[in-house]
Length: 83
Image (cartoon, rainbow, N blue to C red):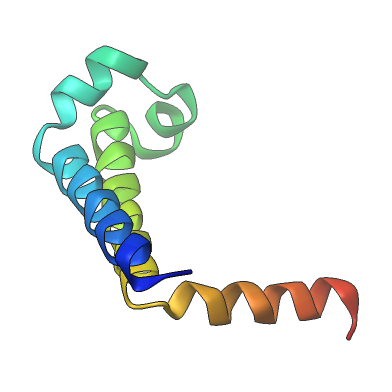
């Protein structure tokens, strides 16, 4: 992927992840509570889940911007295709 596309895309994904962590209550109002998280983490589990998801999305954006994701996907494809 071209750096002119990869870097802004990665930065945009990082911003989305940051906003998920910062404004978790807005995300909960859009998507609702997660019953699995509420059962496993107790009261406030959905907030914790969305914050963890936001951190993961931010790291995904960093991996895309730095082109680390292509190596990870190539290795995963090699495992799945046995080549």
